Length: 599
Image (cartoon, rainbow, N blue to C red; front, side, top):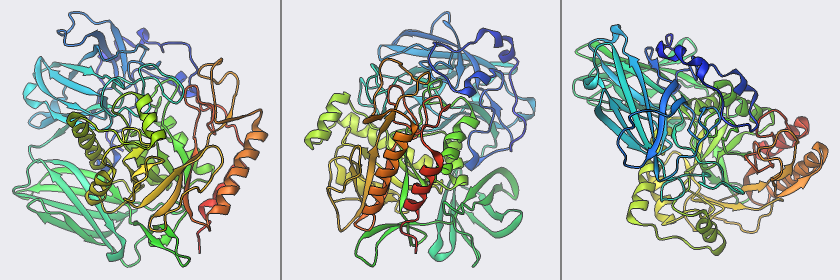
C-alpha cells in the first residue's frame, strides 16, 4: 500500500465539533467515523503512486444564492467526502438549483515535494465544480461521476495554502445525468447528492508524468496492451513489467507515446468469477534514461463476447465459453452517506455478501462507484454491467417514455452533456477487468438516438458487450435484448440474433421494523410477512428463470441488493444490519443459475 498519509493539523482542532445530521437509520460503520481519518485508503488502486496527501476531513462550508460572491463567512463544517444532504456530512441540508455550495480549507505541501508539480485530485464532485487555490482559479469540471485532476503548482505558496471549491447541482431540474436523485424524493427516486462525494487528495509528479493507463487484454493472441497516456510523450520511454506474484512473466517498452505490447506466457491464467486471477503491473516513465514517474497497477486476462450455441441460441461468453450471468441490481446507496459508503470496509461488504450469496455478476444501476469498488470486483471475481446514469428532465416524463415507447428529442446542450459524460465514464472505467457490459440507457429514461449511441459505444470499446437499453424501448442494435418483468420472470420477447436477458425482476419486499428509512411509508413489488415467505418466493422465481435458460434467457438481474430509502425489496436492509433471506437457500439456487450453461 502507499506510504503513510499526511494529515493537516487543522483536522484535529475541530474534531469535537462534528456530529451526524438527522435521526434516520445508520449503518454500524457510521458509529466508528473518525474525522481525523476519513477514507484514508489510496483512492485509485489501478494507478497508484507511493506519495500522496489526503485532504478528506472537516472543511468549512456555506450554502449561498447562485452566482453570489464568495461568502464572507461560512455556515459551519462539512465532513468531506460526504455530500451536503447526507447525515455523515454533518450538514444534512438540500442545496438545490437556486443555491451554490462553497467549501474551504487549508493545506501545507510537504517540503520534500519541492521542485515537482502538484496535482489536486477529486474522485467525484456532483455536478459543476470550480476550484481556487490562494485565490487563483486553477480549473474546474462538470459531471458528477468521474475523477478529475488539476495542476495547482503555479498557484501554491510557501507554508499554508487556501483551497476553495464552489459547486452547483440542479439535480433533476435540468438535463444532467442524475440517476435516482430527485429534489423531492418519492417511490423509486431518492435524496439528491450535491458536492464532493469521493476522496480529495494531492500527489507530486514530475513535469513529464503518467496521466492514465488504458489496459487491454487479448486472450486469443496471448497479448496484453498497456497504453500509458502521458502529460508529454516526446522523449519519454515507457517500460511495463508484468508479475504473477513475485515472478516476472512479461516485460516490454515503447516510445513516442505508443502502447506497450506484452506477450503473455503460454500458461497464462485467465480471470473468471471462480478464479479471479490478477497480474501485477509496474509501469515506469523515463526521460533521458532517468525515471520521471512510476505507478503500480494490475491486469487480468479475460474476454467478453457472444456466440450462438449448438441450439442456435445467442449466448454471452467469458473466455470463449458460454456463461449465464446472474446477479443483483446494485444501486450503491447508503442511509448515512447516500452516494458515499461510510468507509472502505462498508464499500467492500456489499460485494463480499454478493459473492457469499452465489452471484457471479452485478448490474451497477445508474450510478458510478469509487475506483476502489471496481478493484474489489476485480479481486473478488464479479462481472459488472455498468449503467450510464439517466437524466434529462422530469422523472414523470422519463416514465412516460417507458410506457409509451417513445424517445425524447433532447436539446443540443442535453445531448452534448450525455455524450461527454458517457465517454468520460467509459474512459474512467475502461481498464477494470470486471466490466463486461455497457448499458447506455435504462427503461427509456432519457433514451434518445438509441441505434447511434449503441453503435458509438461498441465502436469506442469493442472489447465489451453493449446492452443498448435495459428494459427500455427496444431497437435491433447492440448485442443484447433486455427485458424487465416484475415480480416473476417472463420471456415475453425473444431475439434470435442477439443475446436475450432478463435485466430486472423480483423486487420481493419484506418490512423489518427498526431498520426502515421511513417507518410509516415503504413498498415492494410484492410484500411478505417473514424471512421464510420471502425466501420461498425468491427460490420459486429463480427456479422459473432457471427453467427458461434452455429456452433462451442468458442472464438475469434480481432487484435488489439492499433496501433503498422507502423501497423494502432488498436482500439486506438499508442499514446492512439484517439479511432478510435464508443465505444458504439463496446461494444454492444462485449457483445453479450461474453454472447452468457450464459444459
